[in-house]
Length: 311
Ligand code: FAD
Image (cartoon, rainbow, N blue to C red; front, side):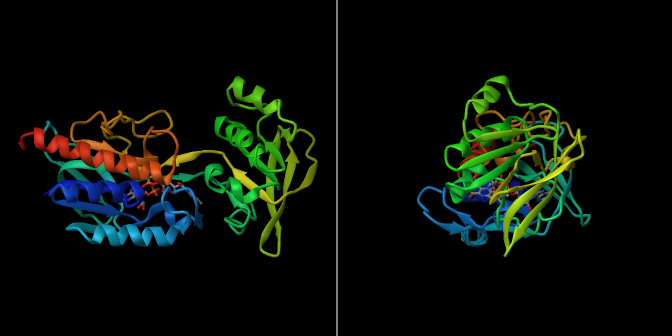
């Protein structure tokens, strides 16, 4: 059995495993795809100390860093079930898609999240070529340009308010006949002169030209009329889905959005089980946050292991 088993090999899992290995604990890291969302990311310009890097390059560097320690890296390993220890100090078991099982004294869950897609023609084709999901990351790429934000919940409206300061014009498109964001955010949004709000709007296609987004087709769900909006960027803000389906049915506490509930030390409701990064209730889903939270969970696992007698 491991002393520490990390499930998920994104920035959070890499951070966690480096910290526990440096404390001298036997550490394993099992990931469906080591590097996680970094593989979907092109330019990264907001990792302090690294003015510019690219997702796959950073993933490679994390793998190299993990490889400098005695960490058992198991790539292409998909966890399908968690069986928590029956008592504090006992062994937790994780089952994998290939039928294998691993046992561990402490467990760090960092299986990340994925952006919900629109699922319309053009979205996948123009991903990173005008179709974006992260305003904090990609907003500055659209300085002075015309963009749309799709989604009128809190994240969509926050994104529109944020982007309106940088871009030339924002069209906010909500499928429902009213916005769902908090009233104070809606009020702020309505006060901005370069924002148009479209409700009952169904995005039917992302259009492009010469390998770049050039517009959006939006159908009015009341009149069925379709119009083409010319723009250069589309931010999809219809939800971030945590990768916790495999934990349902275990006694681990999840929020109503399916995120793992953690405290300020990265502890879950189960002793010896910690979580970090995009999969948790910690706000602001960013690389630097995930790395920091992963490192913190690693230190919390260390603290647990030195204080708990194995049973
Ligand atoms: P993830 O990166 O999601 O990693 C999760 C890990 O868990 C992966 O290894 C995955 O394979 C694994 N996993 C999932 N389910 C299982 C399972 N059942 N069993 C085993 N393993 C599993 N952030 C920035 O700070 N700057 C940016 O410029 C930036 N740009 C982005 C651009 C795009 C297109 C996207 C999608 C995200 C971007 N982000 C950016 C956000 C950033 O990538 C995430 O916040 C960060 O990767 C979260 O790290 P994580 O380790 O929590 O999760």
